[in-house]
Length: 303
Image (tube, rainbow, N blue to C red; front, side, top):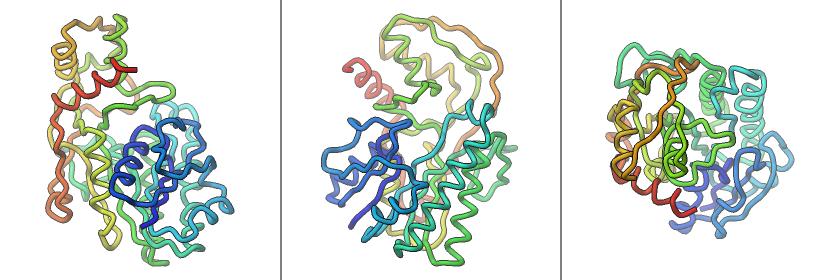
């Protein structure tokens, strides 16, 4: 089975590529390296540097493919407030160009990297897939817009899709440019004996899911039929300051904390209800927060 992974040189994409290669899939990674790293791409995969908005390139890459796993996107929420137009262009317009290339090459399956940001600040938690979607950033809105495009392309052209709404991903190779995600920033600061910045006194509640569990979810839904949407999380909430405590305990040292106050785009509480994917697909996360943080700290100690 031949799978094209867009954004496969990034944090989550590189883990998905590695998992696909382990399972003997034929993998082609397409990434423009604006946020990814070529050395993250598994050597068993074919790497193509390019943009998903390049229809001619994508038609060539997609020829003979069985499915697409689509992660290429602008994903730093802070920047979506500064330049919303680029987020809608890259995440929605370029995404539709990818769908058009798929339609022309008769590729009828796409697994989409969506986000819990489509829910905005939900009124109740844990949040279910059919709960109201009220994104509070251009990032969340652009990702929801592409989910709607997937629905249109399924009903109009028969392209099957599965949208996976990630909650808080963490793990090795999270080398975001620039870094904005809490766990790698905190671990790096701790190891370098530098202070860390937190927001809202680190009192937000989040749902953290380890990156290899996310990768396994993409494999699990490859055979799913229709136009589907699933939450990908642990199903458990944890207060951010408790994550700091876990990191300090594992590393055996204390973090120096600087509180930065409020930050746009941060809902107070966001926890996934994962019963739907558990029931319909059989996917459940296997890596505990304690184990995942230990593996992540070990990774950053090694580089």
